[in-house]
Image (cartoon, rainbow, N blue to C red; front, side):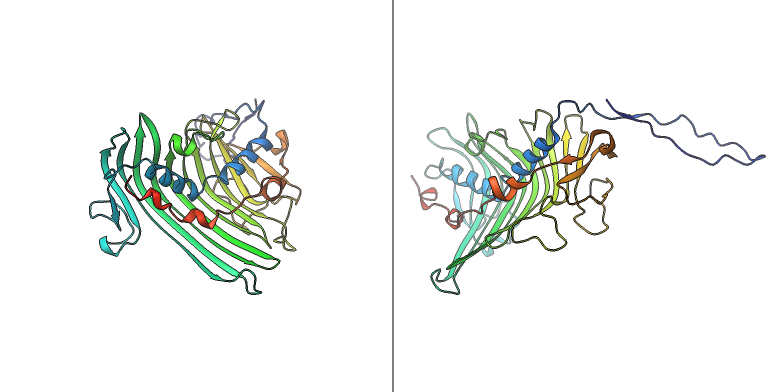
Length: 347
């Protein structure tokens, strides 16, 4: 176990001056026991998890919820009913649809609350021609609703949205995708087969990614796990990272490590931050730790409770090939942006 004694330094008073009572010395800042922690694996798991914390999970929950619907339960509306708390415009001016009800189906499935959603898919051009075909897809949700059948099947409380643009032409494929998700998602219909976070999560995370002729991945925000922990210890994480992949690395960029930092929080609310190359020139990280410039070597400086412990524990060195290589991030299929018609039909 490592400890750090904090000391106050003061100039000795000149002779004849009144002495200054500095009081009791500050308590030692005790650093947590880190034996048994595989830091590279823990931070790798955090990055991998960020790839799944996207608006599509909320959309999957909506599809699953409507799949439990019976005739008249829940009620469906074009736009937003007057008494639904959707901040998407005013009444009849709002596009999209809403389920809004407190009801039980004949099969015993309980619906409580609401979810509003809207989506669109537009296609232009021909993929066999030089100019190619461009597909633009968007979807947005807001909700505070729960679907139960003894246990929670789907719960979504928050806002989500993503947008995808993809251009395909002969020997050319490029896509740009962004996702924002702020809120809580739980339920067996969404997380029943999830090996990492079976209990769901609460998050405020934005993701921006490109692929095809150039690769970029930028997760920014935080994630809190309800019923699981990374390495049995960390229940929260915060990320502010920018990965440049093949075709996107400029002369001043580094392909071996990201720019930015990420942190893990344990059950004692202690933060473990690893800082890589500064993402923004001469700007501190939001975690309050020093943004010491590091070499382009795949290693970041480790801070425990804001204290640089790299000299004692060594830097955290990672292999980031998984980001674009062994397990690359893939954008949603444009077909996923269209809600299946059978979900809206009365059984």
